[in-house]
Structures are given as C-alpha cells and as structure tokens.
Length: 95
Image (tube, rainbow, N blue to C red; front, side, top):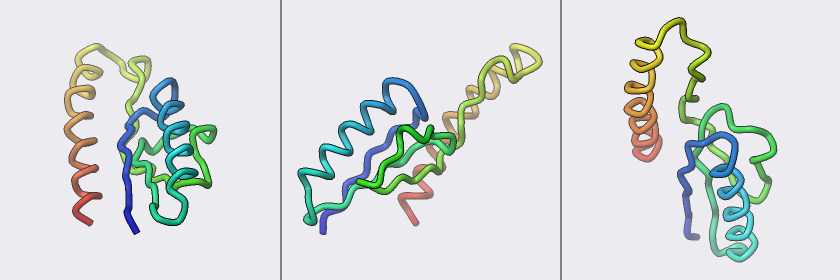
C-alpha cells in the first residue's frame, strides 16, 4: 500500500480547508490502494479533521501576538517557532 502524507502546519483558515478538501478527494480516489495522512498543528480545528484520512496533530501551535507581553518576546517566539516546527516534522518522519 502506498502512504501519502500532506504537511499543512496551519490549524485553521484557508490552508486547512484546502488540505481537508484535497485529502478527502485523494482518499476517495485512492480507495484501498493508498493510505493518506495529514501532518498538522496540535491545535487543528475539529472541522478540519476527517475519518477519510489519519490526522497527526503533532506540530506546535503558533501563538497569537496578543499572548505576549512585549514585541521582543513575540518576535523571539516567531523565530524559534519555525525551527521547532520543522524539527518536530523531521523527528516524526524519522520515527
């Protein structure tokens, strides 16, 4: 069986909606020949989950600017977030 993984770090909005629609269509077309997995953020919204494919909500969520007390801590969070996210994906792929 062929396994297809889609990487969509966005937990909501347009990217998540696109991923849901594409994964649902692929799963329907792939039948039993293929298995589909979505790798996404830990805070993925329920509306973007599906029984048609496996969801792996393993990526750290991106915190809103309003959650930080100052601009410097927000900027540092943004810089480190992307490196942590990519490391998490690579660790998942290795496992």
